[in-house]
Length: 238
Image (cartoon, rainbow, N blue to C red; front, side, top):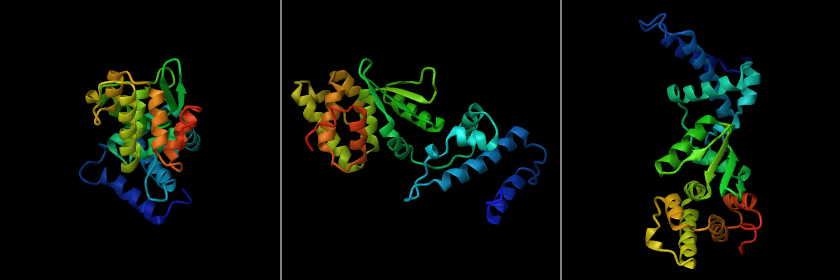
């Protein structure tokens, strides 16, 4: 607490006092107080690690480091993070947080799924909700931080987190790949990329190879794709 400013401490007191001195004394439980104090701590830590452009990233503070700092289990940290975001949400762009983790993704050839670590439970919830709204599903299996997703829905996520120009190039490269395989292009729906690719039975790695050739060499997403499927996206002619 030594590095907390007077202004930060005053704001914390005002928030705590509001739960006691507005004709509601004694209604704030210990669990409520624990969550509020955790919210103060997490908000400050996340803001300390914000991107230069001001975007916030939940991935910046790991459950492990928080558990050591507060001397609680990682399981409790995870539960508090989820409850905190529901009651005391902090605004952040989950797509930016997801894009930052792309370089850690890996492709499993046998299952044709992308596997990647999603350290923050709230980010995983956002990704899961997006995919489920599109009619797909993700799997976490035994490790709740490991995301497994079909390559078709992963491609849709890549398009979603790309800038508008790159997104247009991705859509164009997908359509070109569909034409090459003599599939029915009319089935393809730009607003539902994952399901469309599954319905068309288009090879996902070929799509990624096409995407990499459509994006600029300095694009960070292209770099991530090269790492995910080396020898496919990495050999594309730029």
